[in-house]
Image (tube, rainbow, N blue to C red; front, side, top):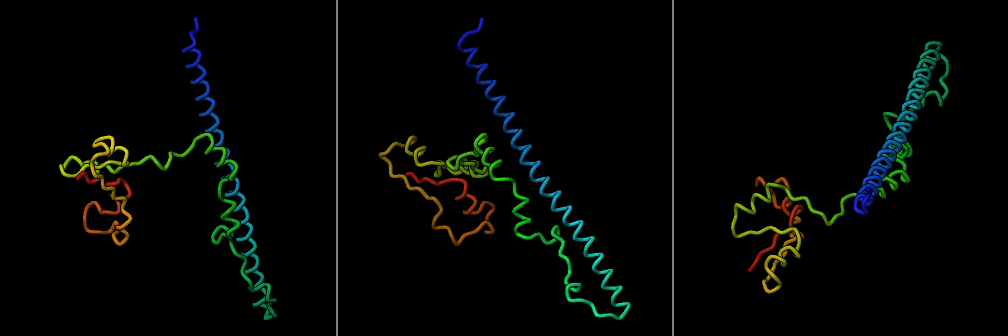
Length: 183
């Protein structure tokens, strides 16, 4: 006997499997398109190297006969693999329509989510006067609206960098968390 809950669970599982299969297909299509562009560029590079080799050989033949070398023979044939043009670089990028389809199926984590370095979280437990919250709302939930909360988002730390001599620089901390001072 199938219950409503079981039917919904099966539908959800089926939808997740279909979504995973669609994501896999989109990733495979993206990889195939990139590989195809690389193969085309490789073929063009091979033919350019062959043409350059033939050009050099003909120039040597003409020089050995002490004849006049045409100006177009003196221009080297560029290798598109070694020195790709902007168009070649663009062709190596995955197709935008496939990337868009993949992003619809598998959205990137939102910018509101925050990854905090474990070393910074360790500081929270080592120093009793500092509490680290990732959002103002978390601090207000802990202490309520009656307390004065100071948020440091790191905008005034432009002159500091990760190369400071401290083991955890201010820049890396500012990127990972907002500091809240409770008065």
